[in-house]
Image (tube, rainbow, N blue to C red; front, top):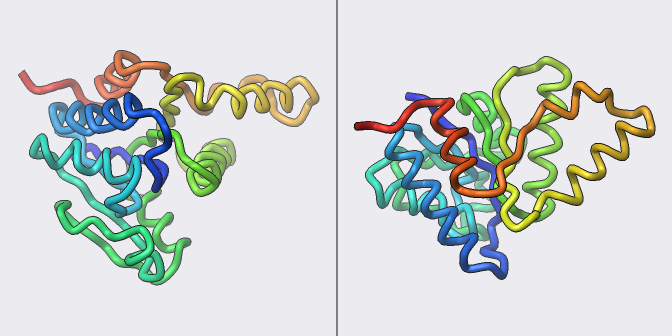
Length: 184
């Protein structure tokens, strides 16, 4: 089974259409037999993606460190739940299990994860596809910063292609199709 590692906020944010779209993405993954690997929470966008895939009969593996198990309220309704001792162990499992990465809107933790996974790809630690879901321009400022850094000589122009972005569900669907086409 192809597994998509999804980074997402533990909060819902303030846009109900985003929450609905994230739930739909889970269903889109299930329709393509793409499993979910994620941070293990049942709250926020993390919970929305997990609920979306499990509601559609798909596979979800959550990985959560023990100290966040209660804080983020570990999702008990998913296929598999792994409790780790540290954040580093959590991320290592997520990175290893994922065949590709999808980054949804989120806070500092999500931003840290996207920067780390892009850096690891830059350093050739992996060559897995990375997609940012740029709902309503959420990632525009971060991507603009990458371009400024490139213009200032800190990021090679070719490295700007280490991650892609999609503004809508059609773009996400195309990304998912590139991993595994939908069932008939």
